[in-house]
Length: 83
Image 1 (cartoon, rainbow, N blue to C red):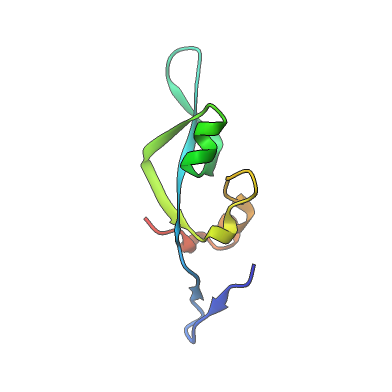
Image 2 (cartoon, helix red, strand yellow):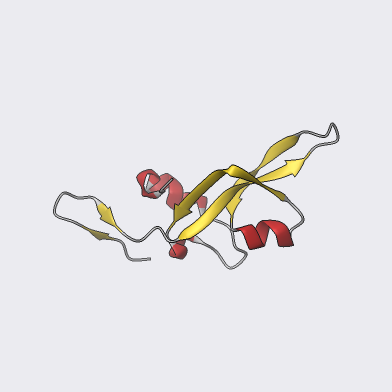
């Protein structure tokens, strides 16, 4: 993925994909984070739940073929998420 930078060194890309925390129900009826962020479609397809309060936007290039965010890119460019 190519990321352009403006003259101030700020990364320029479009945060155009809605993603959510992926939640997994535990045996006690509570929900636990499944360790990834994904699109609504991927989470539903995999039988997991999404946390609607966790909505953020990221570049579509960060979404892998399975519909989940590449967390290495999040670690590399943490300020690229848009709430």
